[in-house]
Amino acid sequence: MTTSPRSAQERIRITGGRVIDPANDVDTVADVCIAAGRVAAIGTVPDGFTADHEIEAAGSIVCPGLVDISARLREPGQEHKATIASESRAAATGGITTLCCPPDTYPVIDTPAVAELIRLRAEAAGLARVVTLGALTRQLGGEQLSEMAALQRAGCVGVSNGLRPVASTLIQRRALEYAATFDLTVFLYANDDTLANNGCAHEGRVATRLGLPGIPEAAETAAVARDLALIEQTGVRAHFCRLTSGRAARMVARAQYDGVPVTADTAVPYLYLSETDIGEFDSQCHLIPPLRTVEDRQLLRDAVQRGTLSAICSDHQPHEPDAKSGPYPSTEPGASGLDTLLPLSLRYGEEQGVPLPDLIDRLTRGPAHILGLPYGTLSVGASADICIFDPERTWLVDNSTLASNGHNTPFRGWEMQGRVTHTLFEGRVVYSMV
Image (cartoon, rainbow, N blue to C red; front, side, top):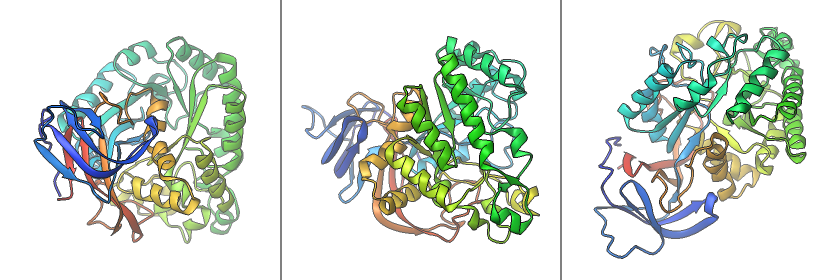
């Protein structure tokens, strides 16, 4: 296994793989030629092109590098959990070439300096592209609007208040109006904080049996209803992050049908797990928003298949072991997900009957479109961000196979099918199993 980058000037030819590029409706066995960090051709080799390096991909899938719309890299501020360098390495191992970092770092991404720091650290690592969301309000305090124009100039691809509530519906409206003036996408965590009431599990039979404080489905759906009304009022472009309930997905589907400029995603654990997986206080299943019912899980699966949820993300949240030790309510929520995003998505696609190009679309073109980025495609001239994976290779999730610093995963011990063999970022081989 290597993660040492090759020269961006090296000409590379990927031969014999099944090339899937949903952005261009490509699904064929063909060669891919790369020159000067860009896709030079798919299929016919350009005149005069001579490869410095060839990658044999027969039996493998060649697709755009994955775009993960939510990954907390823990730097700056929580380097004891992970760093940009360590998680960029894990991303490369998982075929992910673009990561979007929410604004709830320490310090918060509410100034250009913090956004610039993250960009420079990612460039120094050189293994994946890291883009940022700026804070919707100063210090994510929910009261004073941030300097959105300055954050946009610093490269932030949108704004969000992370998991923190905004103080009032009026401030929320003003924030959406202000973002709309700069054509910024607002990324919304749909949660009514007063209804959630510091809960830690879905309000239902499992939480009742275990005596855990619950978060009702209405905490999500009430927030979605409010925010959809404000989106229509302000005309802002908005995205709902990590929906967990079937009812919320249906509300978004109706808004999309009515022409409201809104998109939504879910994280891959919600396509597999439900409240029942908490078992006897399994802290690895302590996620916020919480795992909901088996019925919600299936409705989310259907919404991804229909395209209502146009992106699947990892919602990567690496933790040190102590963060998951102790009584369930006191453990830190979140799971490490970069290593398992692709194989779990492939498994979902096979179980749900989703065609492979449609599934790859939810991991590449879909999230890139939401972020307004020109990635997630193998168009000629596009950045050569490429994932090559063997769909038949199996592996076991354990400490030895997880590249992330965070080994906190509810999927430990699961056998995965589908393994990345090569990742190219801007035309450089940044990961190879060989």
